[in-house]
Length: 198
Image (cartoon, rainbow, N blue to C red):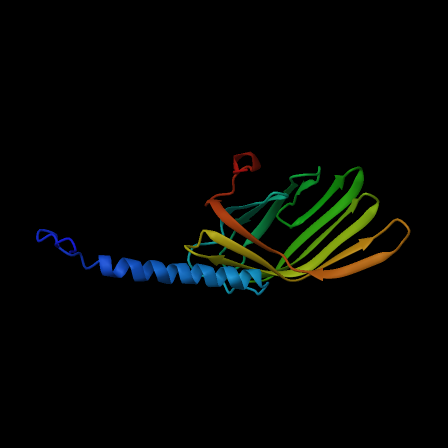
């Protein structure tokens, strides 16, 4: 015979809700994993919450990038600090978005420009040129920036990024690639590079 039910136990209505909710969440996570594994772009939600002004940081195994923003919400100014994690390449732009630097004794160039701006979206262009192991590398592309979540996440998506390589013998190769970076806001003010999380 089965054990008798405890007459003193009161059923909590939440017990019947938690399991279906957990199963639904698990199904969503699995579906997104399958979509990502198939190489399809996952639609992300954007928000008007938050503001551009402040310091934003992106850190990966290879790159450490900071966006510093100031000025009015509809037309912010952008300054960039870039540091490669595995090779001695680093630069910092002025508020004009330009930086001339040297990498391995060779001149490098970086330019970023905001061309169509609003309080919730930024569109612009990106240009980066440097020499690596005798090969001249050039990145050029257009991008879109938007905030996400609670307004303290920033999504940088390259709409069209072209990567060109010119070897020492003059052979040029070019291909189109995609890149997306997710920044998080670390301060509402423009902080020093040394204050940023690594």
